[in-house]
Image (cartoon, rainbow, N blue to C red; front, side, top):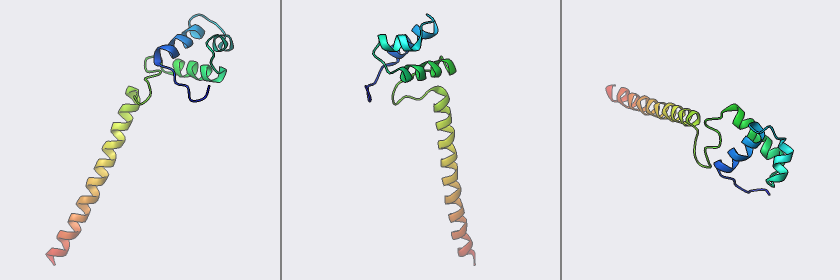
Length: 96
């Protein structure tokens, strides 16, 4: 079972069998040939963030994307600062 990938629709289908239909995780996992712990993780993830659950491999949720963009902006600004500091050092030497 390890390494098997499931698409968003399948994950939502399995999770909704537990969340909306009130079935046991172990029962649904057995029926869909899933590892119990895997389905349990999906249920927890779904309950934490229903709208953005299971965005797909390689895709970021809107929250993750905003965090990534913020971190990238910080890195870019830090790099610009470092360049400006070096330039100031060069100009200061030339003034002497």
